[in-house]
Image (cartoon, rainbow, N blue to C red; front, side, top):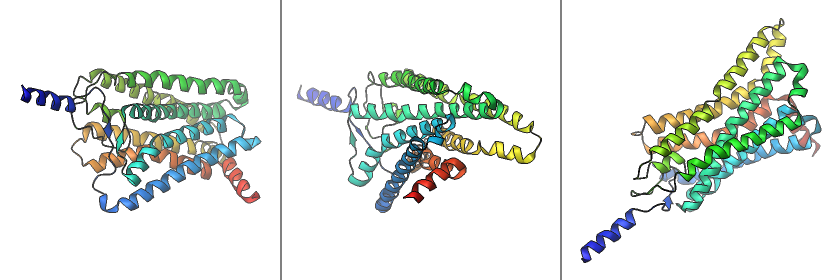
Length: 318
C-alpha cells in the first residue's frame, strides 16, 4: 500500500497539466558565457536604440509624415515588440541564471513573441503594396493610401494576429506534460513547448501549421507586388530612371530577406535536423528573433536618403 502511494506521488510529480518550464541558454558555450552575455546585451541595446530612433525621427519630422514612413514606423514598432518579448528571459538566463518560468508567463511570452512575428509579416506585405502603388500608379498614390486607410490596415494586422494566436495558445491548456520540462531556448517558443507534451498534440500541430501557412502564405502578395513593380520599371526608357525607381525598393527587399530566411531556416532545423547539436537549434532561433530588429534600422538608415538625412540633422543640430 505504501509502495503504491509512493508510485502515485512520483507519477503526479512527473505528470502535470501545465508545469513550470526550465529555460536554456546556449548549450556548450559555458566557458565563454560572459562574452556571450555581453554580446547579447549589446545586440539588444542596438535593436532597442535603432528602432526607437527610427520611430522618434518619423514622429518628429513633418516631411516624413507619408505612407511609406508610416509603414516603416509600424515595422520598427513590431521589431521593438519582438525584441522586448524575449529580452527579459534571455538576459535573465545569461546574466542571472534565472531559468524557471511560470506557465502564465510562458503563455504571455508566446502571445507577444508569435504575435509580433505575425504582425511583422503583415507589415512587410503592406510595405510591398505601398511600393507597388508608388511605382505603378504614382498619380493616385496619396489618394489610395490615405491616413484613414493606413489606420485601417494597421487595425486589420492587429485583428489578424489576435485571431491567429488565440487558438494556438488556448489549445495548450488541455495538454499534459510528463517529461523533463526543459525548453531548448531562453524563451518560450510554441513548437518547443508542445514537443514536451505527452498527450495528443495533433490539434496543436495542425493549428501551428495553419498559422504558418496563413502568415508565410501571404508571400505571393509580396511576389505579385514585385512582378508588377518590375514590369513597370522595365517600361521606363531611361536606365538611370530605372535604377532610381528600383533603388526605392532595396530596403524593403532587404527587410523581407532578413525576416523570411531565418524563419524558414528555423522551421527546417526543427523539422529535419532534430539530431543536430542543441547549439544549432539555439543559435538558429536567436538569429531568427534578433536579426530583423538589429538590421532593419541599419538598412533603412543607410539606404533611405530621407531617413539618413533626418538622423544626421537630429545629431548635428545637437
